[in-house]
Each structure stands twice: as structure tokens, then as C-alpha cells.
Length: 414
Picture 1 (spheres, one colour):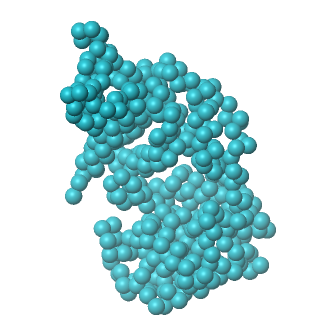
Picture 2 (cartoon, rainbow, N blue to C red):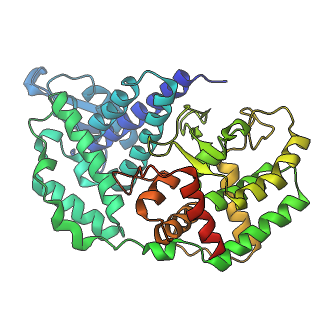
Picture 3 (cartoon, rainbow, N blue to C red):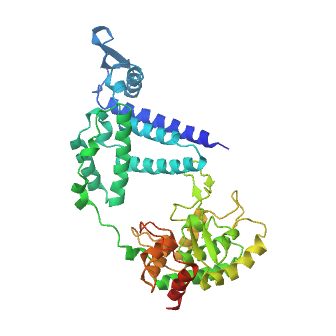
């Protein structure tokens, strides 16, 4: 099995090979290649090189593909040419990836970096690769080039603000790295007026459309009960029901342990991270953020669930350290397996999923947050504290267990 370093080295080797091929295409696109062979049956092209007699090199080949290879093999090792001395977006992007990977020390940090790299690569491939901007040397890129590039992408794609922000983040990382390496003398992105593109973005989906109705949630709970009866040993069914009850993140639910239930609370303090490069699963020992580490009260609804679930868990997995065990390398259910329960439930219960409107497990968080926000003695600060969000900068209300229980119980009795 490949180690993390081997995986990353393989990824970088692949990226370098792809980058070399791209640079080859960029350079060859600047040449005028012959359309037919000379009398000797060979194709020729002249390449400027001050070091050669006459200031240029005559390169022959028996076919156009061979001529392209011969030209590139000559040019790539020739100092003093634009193909070698100039740097492009591809060069800087490769350096961005390299810098990110080498700037961390722990395995947890590396997983986070790998996931950021995957996100960057996806953005680069979708919006930058194959465009005119990719073929312009970094030193020659001006604000007008970027403006044309942004307008082109906004015309060919339906972009939301989040997508444009992601593209801006990648471009900014590229130009900052290019400045650091002295491949360009300025960051033209700093002179872009981003407000100019607001009207070209498509509006975000109304959050009211991104939640399941009370009727749909009731169907989902009923589905959970059916599956728990049919397949009690399948822990993902139980985890899915808990996710609905507490509005928990997938990564939080899959990292829970029985020891997290104590003194009237469910203690949420860890998460499950999947490294998108190595596919390794990691538990960092802390939740998504400082705000995400929290205590959730054991409401009557939650106690009823645990009363049904814990004896079943004890029967099938008496020695596991995890709340939702599974027979795999980590010993617990994965984020992916929990997510599949959601999609299976929607399919079985005829809950329609509309293209372009994402709900998913986060829908339950929105519903629970809204319930607490509008409850008597509730509010956004208490909701932020219960569900570990950053909607309020000062989210800590200092509410006691009794106060939180009172609000949550009042919602279910309303």
C-alpha cells in the first residue's frame, strides 16, 4: 500500500507531466508548421536561437508529430528562449500546490491541505485550463486580460458568488506565488473591481428551498424506524436518525463515542476527515472549529432514541469504542456511508431531489437552527451555540443545561 508521501509524489509527478505537455502545446501554438513536406519527404521548421550560426536552428522530421516532438525536445533545453524563461499560470499553480503541501507538519494538517488542493485543482480545470489566459506569460498579463477572462467564464457558466469567490482565491494564490518567485512584478488581480461582476452572477438558491418540510422529515424518521427493525445491525440507519434529531454534521455524528454521553449531555468534540488524495480517514481530536465543540442536551426525544439504540449496539458491537461501529479499517461508519443513507431514504420515500437545489443532511441543521431561533426564550445566539455555527460572532450565551432543555422541549411540545 502506498504511503502518504508516495501518493503525493505520484500526484506531483502526474502534475509535472501534465504541465510539461501543456507548455509544449502553448509553445507549438506560436509556430507556423509546414503544411506539406519538402522534396526530400521531410518537414522543416526554423527555430530562433542566438547561440546557433545565423541565429536560428533548422529542424527536420519525417512527419508533423515527429517534428513537434523534435522542436519541443530542442527548445525545452535551450536557454534564453521565451519557452524556457517565461512562466505561465500552470507554472505558478504547480508551485502553489508544492508550497501548500510543504507548509504543514501534522497528518491532520496535511489532510486539510490535500482537500484544499483537490478543490483548487477542480477550480483550475473548470475555469482556467484551455483558456487564452493560460497561454499568456505571467509577466504580460494585464487587468484587461483578466477582465476578458472573467467575463468569458461568467458567460459560459452559470456562476454563483461562491464559485466566483473560489476562482478569485485560486487566481490570487497563483499571482502571490508568482510575485514571491519574482516571475512577475505585480499582481494585476489586485486592481480588479469585483463589484463590476455582481450582476453577471446567478442568485443563490433561497435557503427556504434548501430544507425538507416537516412532512418529509416525518417520512424520513419513519423510514429510519423501518430500516432499524429490518436491519438493526446496520449502524448507519441509527446514525441517520440521530443526525435528523440533533441537526448534526455528518463528520460529527460519525466520530461520536459512547463515552461522549454523560451528565445529561451529548458531547460533540471531534470530526471525521477524509483525505481526498490518500483516501485516509483521520480523527483530529477536535470539531470543525472552536464553535463546533459543544454540549447538546439529552432531550426526551434524544433519550428515547438512545433507549432504543444502545441495547442494539451493545448486542452487535459490545467491545467497540465507537457509538456507530462498522466492520472496516477505522471501526466506525464513514461520512460517505452515512450520506448514502440519506439518498437511499429519499429514493425509497419518493422525496424529490431537484437539480441545482442542494439539501442533504445539512437541511436538518437549518431546520433545527430555525426552530431554536424562533422558539420562546430561544434566539440566534442560543441556536449558534447548540449547533456550532459561526452565524453569530458572540454565540456563547452562557445558557445552562436546564435553559437549553427548556427551549428544545418547548419546540417538540408546540
